[in-house]
Length: 345
Image 1 (tube, helix red, strand yellow):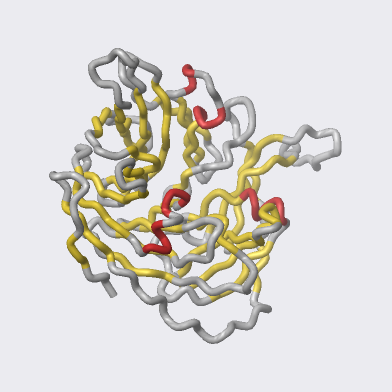
Image 2: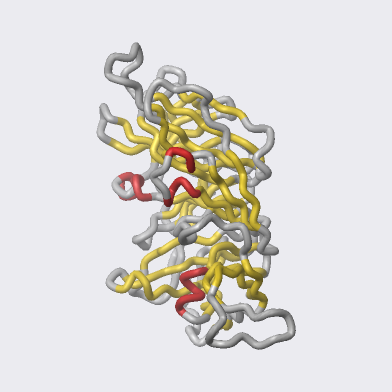
């Protein structure tokens, strides 16, 4: 049920501040038999050709068609890599993209965040002006394009808070997680496609304390607000300012590692971990309506950790493996390379 909205004092005179009242999660469903499991077999493996040297970034951004995007600047301190993006198609095809950067700046330029939406790629850029410049505070821009790197543009952000992280609604509006230096609090705001403020959103006090570590996952036209490292409910955010909570119920002792992009299907895929053993991850499928446990998806622990995207019934993972020539068996002497493996859930 949509949350009631209560007026709040606006942090910006141009903004409409909306309060999303806290909801009570649905009652805990009856325990499900834990024996229900499905093994994932990554039988289809294709080599990834055209990747930049080095390791695959730990943070890949998936879209509902199964494509994975990553920002090579996240793994490099080189200024020349700021424009480099890569797209990995579900087929394993790798394509390099070039993000649009300002032609001239009067201070250091850095990438603060990158995200992939249903139709759009967006990068949060920061320009640090010299101390003697007319404008001393940092200047923030959004570099925006489609999934092929075309129709690129730069959007200037005139904000009275520090943007930290961003995501994109399926309708094209932006969601920005920021920091209000005056009140010493994190905040959420939605922006129009031109960068102007649409409205501010607030969450419950429990979530407020953990908001800086929140992650966003595209879900149709909406976004899912998640809290890795916790058992907090998943919050569905809409540009209208309405939302709802999805509690999730799995065996006790685990916290959320991340939520895989799946599209607006009947279920969500949660990768979880024990707090004391973060590398020992498990994958659970839960209902997207009430969070009840459907089943556990099992595989080699390294494969579970390597899963990148889910789209429909297909799950893809990126890991190192040996692939022999067509018609031949692999041997211990074969060199391992990055491959994309596909399994069916």
